[in-house]
Length: 101
Image (tube, rainbow, N blue to C red; front, side, top):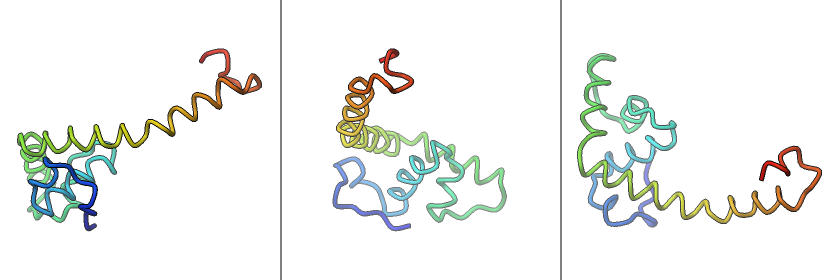
């Protein structure tokens, strides 16, 4: 996986290419740091080593800052879709969840 760096903010831009892929994979795999670590191409001897190294990387401040930044970017980009879904729900009295909205 190669990261498309065009949309990166300052925190993601500070990372190496491999670290950027790690952060993106962290989102892609639902927060599974071990899977993200593996998919980013990091080397490890066994599953225990993979978990320990992934845990180390996920807690580094530069990685945490990049995750926070990417999370904010994704939230902003998702806002129009969420707004449209809510409007569709509210505007459709036949929808099963209409009265929950």
